[in-house]
Length: 358
Image (cartoon, rainbow, N blue to C red; front, top):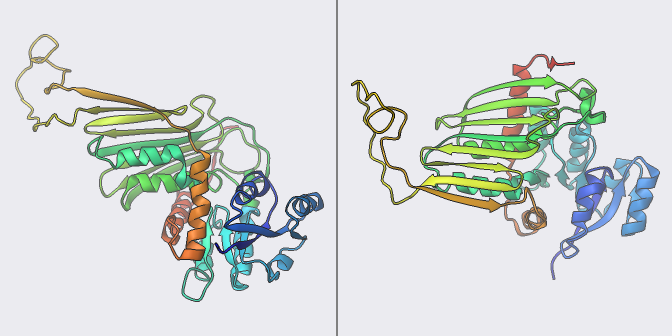
């Protein structure tokens, strides 16, 4: 019989209640919610009614609950460091919503209290590493089908006049700390090497508060690959997830659940192209200009790929369980999370102020 991990949930809000708690409940053979904490009484009562669990108004009381083995923290971003540190010092394993903290320095310190022999585990909820669409794009980019991939573009776009706490810097708001940890993680995976250079900018366009709701980052790797990423709450067209990848033998495009791949037939050996300094012919064509010097035979493929599906979501919880119970390291490593936070810190340093459109 499997060991059942006893979970205490802190924060019964949009992510806690709306997404993760319902997912945890599907894995009754691995996890059991035994305690919940929220400042709002109605939310506590909802957890007690549905799960028959202990409920607390104060996080200290849940942390001190000896029945709790794993604490899932879905509190506001600016509280992640404080709450995570309290739980780890109490010897509890922690699943922490992204961003792990709101600064690189806090993240380093938090990990100093975890993931070493004799210390509890700290896993960050970077579940979008396992998006179906990203996984397929990543597979093709690394398959060699497109040849040497020199540029990748990835976007998460929408359009809204947002007004919640995630637009206020005091609470760790802004798209850099909201969608940022997910898309930065995917971008670094698609880069496939160390970052050689990085450029960025931040805009505030339609959202309230004092944070960016539109941003772009360009990563340049020491493999000469460029990854451009953008996150926007102010893009009226091209909404949702979007990927492009370009190689010297083909390209891919993902938009609206459609993945299109075009590449040169693998049987074709492309010889070295030697340019001539002579004057080309007067007519367009092979002896003139604007035509490939080599005959190309293209292969076209198209897939319907959801951005994410329930099977991929299930993988996160199974891998979390394997890490905690079977000692199989979770694939989004501590080093991966710290690389995300270094990127966020660099972007903040590059942008001393946010460009305001309104």
